Length: 256
Image (cartoon, rainbow, N blue to C red; front, side):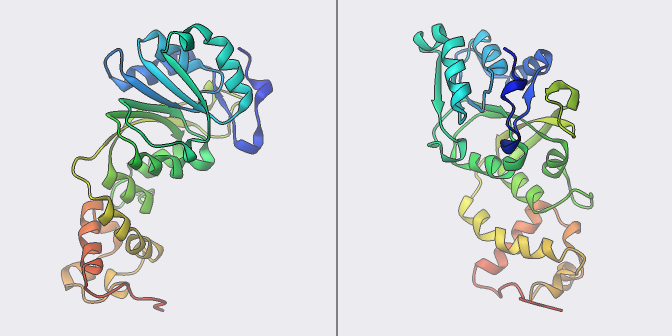
C-alpha cells in the first residue's frame, strides 16, 4: 500500500517503509504465539501484518479514519477470524487494559504522554520506536547530557533497553531525525502514588540543575546537600523526594 499520499504534517505522520525493521520490532517483543498485542497507530499496517503472520492476536488503535477503513479492507479475513480488532480511537483516550505486549512507532510530538500512559496498562513487554533524541533521554544516566526529569521518571517505572538505531531513510516521508527502537518492561513493585508525589520535587530539582541541592531543598544532610542532581541515580532522587512528602520540609520556592 502506498502511504506517502496520506501523510498529514499536522499530526507528524511518517510511515515505516522498511519491512526488515518492522520484522525486527516484532521479534523484539519475544512473546509466544497467541499473545495479545496492542498496536498503537498501525497506519498502513506494515507491523500489523507481521504481527498476524507471527501468530499474535492484535488490537490496533488508530485515530485516523482513513487508515481504519483501509485496515478493515486489507485484513478483512483476520478480523472475521477474530485475530484482529481495529479500534478508531486516540491511544491517549483509549481504555486501559491487560495485554501481553504493546508496540508502535510513536508520533514524536506526543512521545512522553504516550509512554507515561503505559503505567495504566498491564503488559509483559512493549517495543516502541521513538525519535533518537527522546530515546537518549529515556536511557541516560547520571552525569550524561541527556539525563533529565523524563529519564528519572521513566527509569523508576520501567526497565528500558535499546534494541537498535533506525535511519530516517527507513520512513516515508523521511523525517529530519533518526529513530531508535526500545523495549520496556514494568519495574516490579513500583509505588505509583510515591512516584506521582515525587514528580513535582524532581521537577523542581531539575529546573535548577546547576545548583547544589541544599539551595533547592531545606534540611538535607551535607553529604547530600553539597551535590547536584546529576550526582544521583533515579532511585536516589526518589529517596530524597520521599523526605519531603512524608512530612518533612517542602522544596524551597523562588530561591535566588
